[in-house]
Image 1 (cartoon, rainbow, N blue to C red):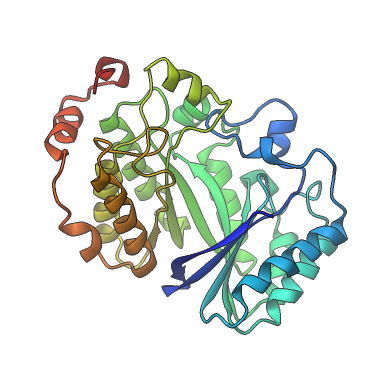
Image 2: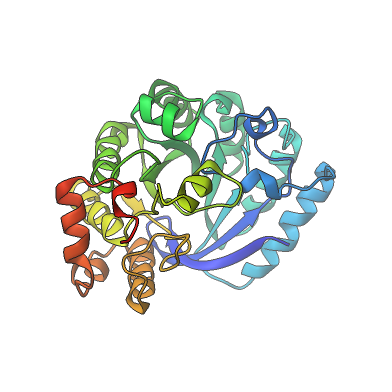
Amino acid sequence: MTYWTSEDNVAGKPGTALFIILPTIGCYRFRIGQACYMCAYPTAAPKVRWSQDALVDYVREALKKVEGRKRVAVRMFTSGSFLDNGELKPETRRKIFEILAGMENVEEIVIESRSELVRYDAVRELAEIVPDKHFEVAIGLETANDDIADVSINKGNTFDDFVKAAEITHEAGAKVKTYLLLKTIFLSERDGIEDVKASIIKAEPYTDTFSINITDIQKGTLYERLWEKGEYRPPWLWSAVEILLWAKKRFPDKRILSDPVGAGSRRGPHNCLTDYDRQIGRAIKKFSATQDLKYIENLKPECRERWEYIVENGLLDWQLMTW
């Protein structure tokens, strides 16, 4: 069973988020051999297809974890797209949302979809079932730079595709969460930071919530192969802190989230791999839950000088194999 709870931001205030990984067949791009270079999530999809009724029962079982909790967000992932009819039939989506509509403690619902699968009728139908809840469609933009999206991610989408999907989502009565990826391959640390900042500025008119996804190394990916050769390093946690501080100050009315998966490990975002890395990871999560900059404004500057030198000089990862 793949579901868990975590302290998180729920419709703008601290609460509990329930994360549910639905065991669908996973992303269609992966199935046709066009997976994003950093993503191994579809490899965890079940080999035997679950029935649609079984998927609904799975959600019911997961929801037991938040019985009696106040201020709950339910965030459902499929290792693909919630709006892909090949993964979840329309009637299945309706049944799941009808269950959530009857839960007073669920204040926020988030689903994920690739841009090309966002359709007005599909989003509108779900929005009408939960009119009193904060309902977001999370779209993996990753970067607003089409060249980076193509060469460093193999995303298969353009920024214009994202804009179209975001506009459809808003017209259908839902909000938009925009995923951005910090530090794709072939970018220096400095370029990775600047790419996320530029992407935030460009996507801001279409976005209600930004989620800054800090790259980690997933097994069997191109990112892992380059990492094993010393040609790629996961982002510094200081880079994430820099972006979060800048974004929240520039766009104070936007919800800015980040969950530093694997913080402080070699495969995850890290500074100098000391115990303090994990404290920074926890501080980032606390900021995300509260949107209060105090948690990341006065962190101990451990290893910061080294990070500043790398950023200021625009050094590439292969030049830093011993760092």
